[in-house]
Image (cartoon, rainbow, N blue to C red):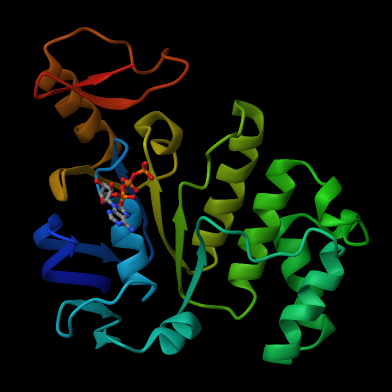
Length: 249
Ligand SMILES: Nc1ncnc2c1ncn2[C@@H]1O[C@H](COP(=O)(O)OP(=O)(O)OP(=O)(O)O)[C@@H](O)[C@H]1O
């Protein structure tokens, strides 16, 4: 039932703790949204889960397995879109998959299948650098999906996208979830991900303050601020901290 479990994890950069006794889990089959303001620790958590930062043993489990110090193995059981894109701008979409397939050797059928899933079959011969940014994000997702991992991790996927392309990506993520995958997303804005997540966790200074349905977390934010905001209508919702309380802007 649980695909990701983090138990009593401490993590610090130099002398500053980012996570202290951090506990967290993601259920198999869900889209989990980890929401938090800038510097709340989202990327650190994602990098620890993916083995891009070293976590102590017995703290992070993927499908019950402790992958501490096994970054390569984590790469086989997860797919990710993080800060630096894995594609090459000067290659076509197709060439990017061929390049990746040098490692996996699944063959062209798998490439065609993934292109269909991500909706890029019609631009397969275009160079990546001329694609729209939403198409480039689709490509990143496709490359993450290529080896068919069960668990996908997307850090700040919707950054720099306008509403229309975001909506298109929502559809893709739901399609991927329905195909049997689990997705962990991070985002600064609840608004960006509330319609697709089954569970949302609100991260603050390395702790999950509240977790539940998007509505529950939204209500919590409203109540905590004591301010009246219409989150449904707000064009862009940022969870920010004002004098110790959460507000939305
Ligand atoms: N390589 C690093 N060295 C030192 N401190 C770091 C490093 N990376 C992150 N931090 C610090 O750790 C804290 C959490 O940063 P992190 O990037 O995980 O937050 P975040 O929620 O992903 O932020 P954002 O939304 O801006 O990406 C911040 O105080 C940040 O300054």
